[in-house]
Image (cartoon, rainbow, N blue to C red; front, side, top):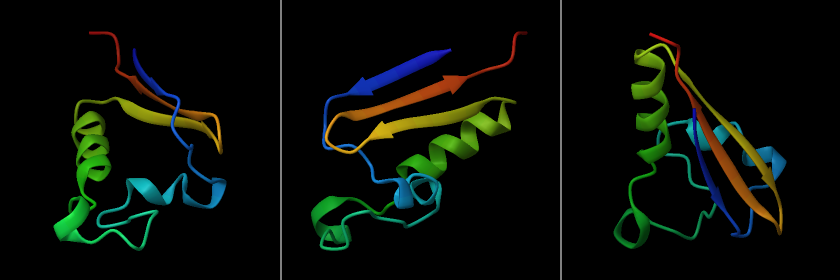
Amino acid sequence: MVEVIDQGPGIAPQHQQKIFERFYRVDKARSRTSGGAGLGLSIARWAIQRQGGDIELESDVGRGSLFRIVMPNQ
């Protein structure tokens, strides 16, 4: 298990599952030229699931986020 924690703005509940979709951006004002393609988390989830693992998100608006990667025991 690996956990990545931040103290950023957090992710609102209505976005928490969608952020793993390809090309999804929480901030609609961000464009490809100013902030990526919206593929990072979808690629991460795909790669982790391909190896039999999963990625989980816990987030509270105003308090930050925790991403947890859980891989199977070999």
